[in-house]
Image (cartoon, rainbow, N blue to C red; front, side, top):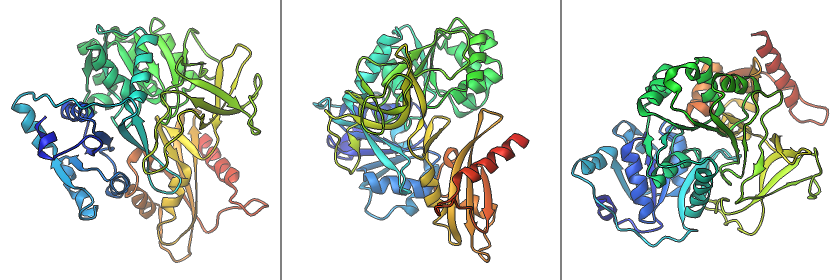
Length: 460
């Protein structure tokens, strides 16, 4: 594309994309990767302060954004970004016809993407993904689930979310069709059902919460869903009852649970053969590209049914966090996830090691939420937790203690959090206290706070 020359971009330079997903976005990503550039997809719903944090962390040579998002530039220090362009400029170029970029010599270990995640310091961290990381995962998935050029993919996950890799790179590497649905098509189950039928979508890869929504509206009972052959899910635990309903509605579909944090991408999977579950669906077995260990607190390999931390090594492990020392590819990566192997050798997820939680596939640090809340003048302490209402619906809750004369209320606290986080990462419930409860050893009694939220949820 002409813009590669216009902005004098060289292999290794970074491009920030603060724009909605669409054909222009795909064009920029593919041309940039072919030229050896590093792509930084930014959530188009992110508030200005988060965008500023991402740009300060990654310092891209070029930022592409929509006209409606130009106001975000007011928060970016002068000189931080070398070049800034609007999406309209690229769309005009596309209308002039295709322009094939010069293909650069790229090594497998060259950085391809920087995917931003939540950090415990209140600042986003950049997960640096190599070309090999993408290629190994995509090639494994295509072979594992027998996908081909005759399949039709739908891209549900945003490009800043690692689930998008299979849709985008898998479909295009096969020469298969890839459909990019609009926001309205994704928000209305009936419209999404029409997307499946109209485009003969055969492969669907998404988070369980989206599948649960479609199941609740009986999308899979409709004739419109008949083209679907393969449904893959990842990003969060699939509530057992909702999974059983999905299988009951379409028992003929190939289902699989894919598991792994963004830092490692998928390193284990489980093909569903049961018609119903009483316990959560297993993580399954390690992929053929992954060397997986479950270690106890002393670093020893955990025995059968013994819970330990998942450690993984292999070619899908990230290069490292941007701006921090690279990882040693020969060493195991500690995922922070707890799991155990049963007598049959299947791996089962047992929760997180720390304060990281997942909501609708997005990983969120509770400490991140607390640190940002504490930035509001008048907040003394903050404690965040994730609770489930009616056993399935997830709610991010925040308790804070305030000064008596601070004047802080739920409305002002909510507005403060909205300035830092996209909607999916904002608490949905708030409680304001004069003082938070403590345990006997002087720490915030998080268990008591969580119990209060859980009791309230059961009463609703």
